[in-house]
Amino acid sequence: MKSWKKNWDIISPIFKFSQEVRKVIYTTNAIESLNSVYRRLNNQRSVFPSDIVLLKSLYLSTFEATKKWTITL
Image (cartoon, rainbow, N blue to C red; front, side):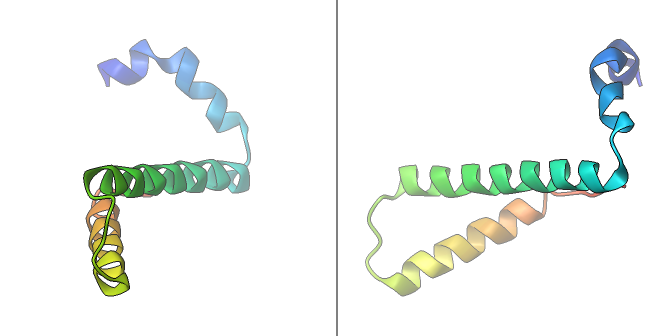
């Protein structure tokens, strides 16, 4: 609660948008987060022996990233 109260002037403007617009903002943040996970994967291992290995790596990265997501509307 301290963080919310301290930063209320920064946080509160988002609630002026409609629920549909806020959903787009949240979705965009999730997409950017997932892109970050994929970039990190690519930086760690830039060569994949086969397409199957690449797909498995992307699947596992996506699976791990989605564990951190929460939606509250």
